[in-house]
Image 1 (spheres, helix red, strand yellow):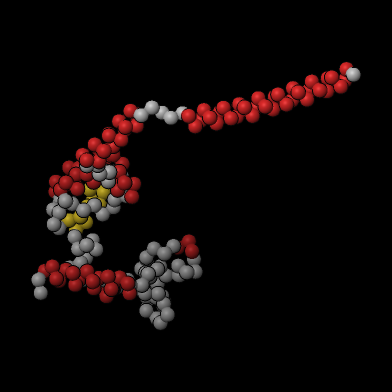
Image 2: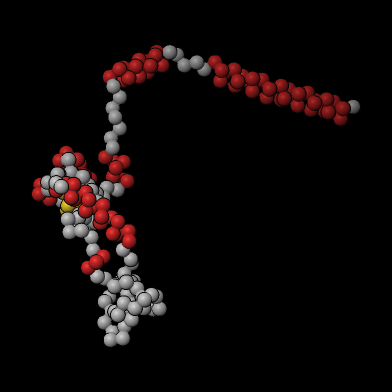
Length: 197
């Protein structure tokens, strides 16, 4: 069995073991929330957990560990390297390593590191969704499409703007207003005449 096959097999075994591995909680963490669920070894003389009595929580032991070949590797089977700046990328081998950008690195430097890693062919494990959007540049339209757009713009500029419809609408509105004013003035005159009589 060759080394790559062994590594793939070890990664699968590690995944199965990690699925069966219990959550190691501190002794009596269920009774006293202040203890938290961080692991601490039980050392009491009469500790039932240390004596591995039935029904007690599991203790950290070598039997729960994964295969030696896959230990400390990324799920892709490559070694994970922490990177702080662009210069650190020079030490990385794309065939065997993947990079994780440190949490203390700012946005500008993160983008620089990601762009450089693309050119080198190194995979970045922790790219943020916002960074993916910034790096994905829109594809430029072909020359034919650009020429067609320019022709359309010229046609639009060449034609005189048609303002007949709005003018007609404005004219109709004015006519209705004028008619209302005439009716109102006629009614007013009639009332004045009636008042004089």
